[in-house]
Length: 243
Image (cartoon, rainbow, N blue to C red; front, side, top):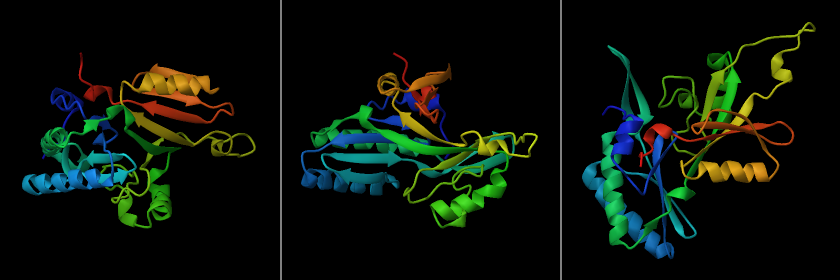
């Protein structure tokens, strides 16, 4: 199936779900583990019928779900296609059914609680260094470019955060010292729901952080700590229902 645009995802009006990074995410509150197990069993049966299942995590008082298709088609240009990990219509169908099941089980969604952490590394040589990071993070060379037309590192099992590579221009001073030695290369990407971002940013500022770049807000807001280390609060604004 084709990957879906943010507009298509927003149009589905999946009130229990939020589009974060590449997938759809939901958290449902449960009273105990037995209730979580019953809910997940029902999801499994529904997924069998639809031919697609979410990634599931059960914790104290919650069930976390992620929906993503590993065979989504990205049409870069006429005649140029890539198979990527992204949201497809099948994910929307399964999400809608899970929402129905949650209501049947008397469970409430907590969409403001979902978040995703990814890592960013600025480099001009992603093809050169990506194999090192694939080995370090996952131990699997196939994680380089998994579900992406780029060199991004994605662990198929979801054990570690995705690592993507941003653009950087290598420079050196008169002594030959690379700029890599004097500036931050790594940063954390914190994906949250649109309604959460203002509070998350405000909390970081109250703790002593500072906004260093909000030129692309609310999609991207760069925050620095007191030592100048940077992170980015990310919102997929394209997939937000306009009220």
